[in-house]
Length: 277
Image (cartoon, rainbow, N blue to C red; front, side, top):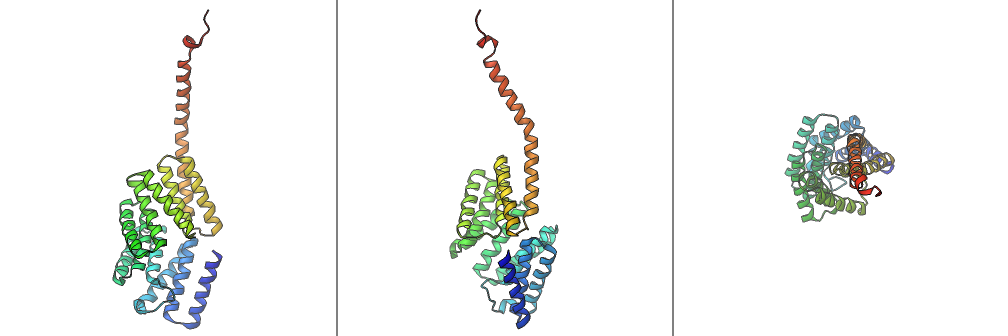
């Protein structure tokens, strides 16, 4: 995440030189988001909360920012995940409610599509698949209507996750992989480890433990090589679950193999296969 680190540093430098509220807000958000993706959650929280506080102090909805995205939408979207990862689900819920109210009040489709993707991601992290489906469906509608291919692919990915867990694993996985490949073609590497984690969990739920383990291992390697360390804990925890499942299934597989051998032997036993005298 070297280029991102340099960009965040430059934003902080610019804000310190100009002291403009829009630059200060944007720089705090950029640094907080970077730290969030690195998994440095306590520090990320400080910057993201600072961005929100500055936005409120300076009536940020009336400011003109360097990027088209409203920085409070981005800050709250990241902050609810940070707080959730820190173990405060109630706190994350409060931040999500603030995000929901703010983005609806803004009335901007781009920010709404972005927020819904982050809300879908949070619901998926919590394995609340009914809420995930609702967020992803609305997000996909917004993104398709306005032709936002990146967020549309993310919403489609999470809709597939919900379908895989709630309705039809094969159909859901097909949608997930189509969206995953679309994001790869768009060059979206951000949160790739988290997407691989979702694919691994679907494979695990389907009983494809070898494939699940392979996907999770790719996710772990990807997170480490990219420096995007946020999903590492989830990936490693799921890896342990897969190995535990495989260990529990091993005796069953051995028993089935023995039963198959016995059945074959019985079918070609002494009466059938013994030489006649």
